[in-house]
Length: 193
Length: 193
Image (cartoon, rainbow over all chains, first blue to last red; front, side):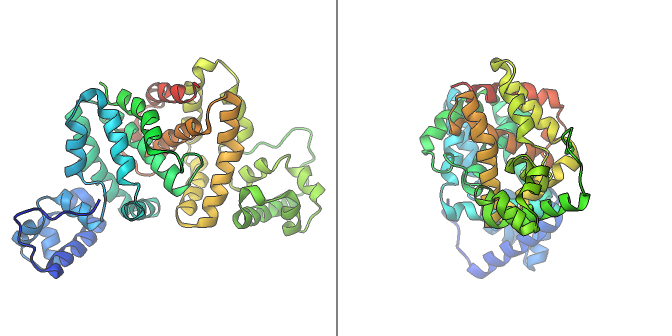
């Protein structure tokens, strides 16, 4: 999923935007997701905080763009929370499998996981973003426990790792819809309070 | 889980045993699990193949000991395959959570996953061992598809990563039996043909 520019926004200098994102990467890596602030990122980029706000609505969006993640909370949350509650398992399984199907979309996610495997600051950053920007918000929106949401994450994370990193067969070559059919009841059960 | 020496075996020189394991690590890393042979490991260790067989019954056991893995197929297979079929999900969830609860047991597993994340030869080795020594044998013993077994693996792998690497809360601090209760129905469903 590529980053979409919001309508009605002046595109501005590509350089300034890129410099803010480079600064954001440094600040997130150093402070983690929770402690990073727009003000701190502006200081690192040597620009006015208003300019950071001009380019990025939220810290979540800045993180997603700085890390080039295909999993954007602004997309994932409505997809999961809207629509029939009895199909939430199916919707979430299909969304994640599809978002990570493209190698270019997957590469930044795997890069982030790699750094989290070896670097304590990267772990903090990934954990804080995953929980506060995604998992807890989905769980609270659905009214299920954070633990149930993390077991859902664990299932999907394991599938992505088994399919695209370890490349276990037949998982790696399995049809997306066959996987959705097997995974949906698992996720549906976790996400039913 | 520590490595247990089989009863009735001459312990032999600690050096020879250690040299065979060091040679095994090299050969597994170079050739992968499938193509590594006892003969090749003996050649690398500069000992007679009969001596390798004296210390290690099977290639699986050599791999487990060389990599210091807590997950030994000789232990996992009977635990999963024996006992009531309607409790297989609970048994497997409890076994994996318990085996990886100790930091000393976990460390070699995480080291192997780290190298699989960054090194193509390590991926091959891990994939071949996981599938041929563990997953396919459990699946065939239970009469379920390899895909269903790999989704089981994905769920448990994700839980271990979320709990012990990313340390997502509340997953990281969750009670083992609470997790078993939540995970057992998922695994039971996958492992019911």
